[in-house]
Amino acid sequence: MGSHTSCASVRSISTPARIAQLPLTTGFRCIFNLCRVDSKRFYARGKLLLTGEYAVLDGALALGLPTQMGQSLRYFSYSEPGILRWESHTSKGLSWFKADFRTVDFSIVRTTDRPTALRLQQILTKIRLRNPSFLPSGAAVCTRLEFPLEWGLGSSSTLVSNLAAWAQVDPFWLQAETLGGSGCDIACAQCDKPVLFHRENGIPLFREVDFRPPFADRLYFVHLNRKQSTRSGMAAYRKKAHGGKWVEMLTELTRAVIQARDLSAFEGLLTEHERALSRVLNQPPIKAVHFADYPHAVKSLGAWGGDFVLAVGDEAAPAYFSKKGFETVVPYRQMIC
Image (cartoon, rainbow, N blue to C red; front, side, top):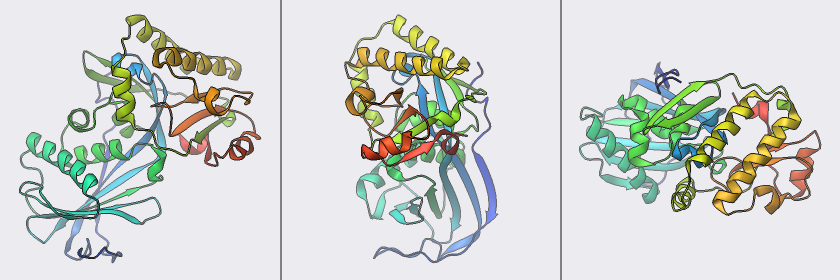
């Protein structure tokens, strides 16, 4: 398996800026008012972790699925010296966060959301430590998600990936210094195909694989109407003791999932994966909690308890989950690259 340079880098495209007027919160001037015409655009994909959740932290092989939806970051040179003007937009184009920072030390001048501004300040400060020449003068930044913020597809990891590409620092290092995590989401951010990922002696290793299940039209992603904190999930997992056999078992399950060509075998592997994690986490599988009467497999993705699950089903599956109150049901081929 290759190193973390095996996939293409996050895309960077130089484009002429389009001057636009956006609705503003009181106290903020338009982010584009003083922008020069040059700009750069960076893009990173979201992710769903199909196998190896939690165990990937201990070196297990995991299968990550880059999503068709991601996040873009556009940087504009800015004629107001010493100021970084930041604005973030939802998938519907609505502004959900604004902040002004002093470029000398990234101190916050003003913001619409102080906790978010403090997290961004931490990331920018870490970048400056690794790359002292990063952002010496004024700049304006616009980010835009392609998926709803509450979906949990990686709004933070895609931001870190884009910022690392802009600043020319290692995205895996930046994530480790700020968000934490295995790094599988960073690998997915940079790739256009499913990713086999593991950590060896703390080093993230991954490669793209041709995972194209022939039964993809029988797979659905169902949102659980709540966002699950990856950090809290990792912290709870870290409090428990795990042996080497656990890592080996999850690795073998990942390999088997990739090779599955029969839907029945695939379902069995998903169920086995859920049972194994249930024993380690001392939590009931998501199917037992919400979908005990469902006739097919349902598997948690990433941190248990929220965000998306993968469900095997037929054309009646969306109606079943909608009746249960889970109305966001996305077919596999509409979600995954």
